[in-house]
Length: 530
Image (cartoon, rainbow, N blue to C red; front, side, top):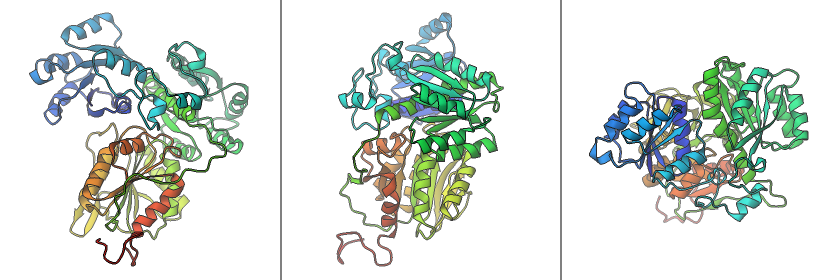
């Protein structure tokens, strides 16, 4: 199914698109009504429009009136998602042709239910299942195995404390603790069980109450957020942690370190450490922080440690043999990526006979710190990609945050091609753009790798690699922080193999060296065609 998301706020578009992608929608985005109308001519007819009310150029009302006047779009359901709460506004929208109206904040459950009410029936996937379930559940159903994993059955009563996600808020600013706690409490699926002013208090309170997710600042007196993460690792405490810190160069570097130490995700505080921009702070909490808290909690409840069970092994899901030499490796990753890359990249070695091109979903301030950290861990250079840079054997590049990374072939050479076009799949950089351009440049001589991440970015690109004759491997569910992107590739039929993170380097090395220096594929004879 296809959804067209129209909102002038990039973070809002991103969150809505990702919510829709968890329900198996393909999403298209526009930042105002005028841009949406221009892009409609390039798109198939969507199954639903999701549109904001207050926008520049062409607002929600004007868009509704315009699109309802176009015969082929007149019957497409249209859902308004807006900060407006006035009944008069809702009435105007309804009279203009809107099928439904949702006031922010919006949860995945309310979005899904409202879509069903207006006649749009997406694949209904619970958040835990989206992280890695092998099948889909219909509305209101939950498998017995999921109930057993979670340790408590989710009911329909959101006021029941046993069904809520229990959050510990840790920040040295009493103002930030108060604002964050107040907004989190407004969500019926969340409960703030306690707060702490520093890391020492936070660790003590972890012993005193049950916590599903810790929301953690980085810079605090007595014990910093990074020190808390190190202590949690020493204690083997698996409480999921989401970082909430300032968007500065120093904050970006510390956040990368936090992700390497095991934090599940991060959201940046608008206005600095004390969140001086109150309006933007509220938006960040509603539209970015709350979904990530729920995502972290869902994964923790869905996958408990398995005692006495051996680590998972690679699973081949395609019998299609590798018949071509691999000339490049492209990697797509999102949530949980820094840790996964830290485990993978150093094992590949500087003598790898092919370039490695990486798209990690991250803001512009972060990717330089990520590449620097990978360089330190690996002992060889991992750099931010530069436009026009040749992609030679042993080159490791990371897409700069805020730009799309593609590749182009010029004769025998392939070079980096950066561009500043709009976000795709709510992502910039976008994995699909890299994978599709690499499939054209390298044809079948390409290995695609999809690691942990939320959403479905990389699925279309993996399909392009497979159609060109290349191979695709994905990280397995158990070792992924979120099995959204890899799971989507598997469900699409584009994956050749599912591999645990600890076996990925060996798998990549095997494929990269195959048909080089006299090496041939296992089972191939002298008469095999290459």
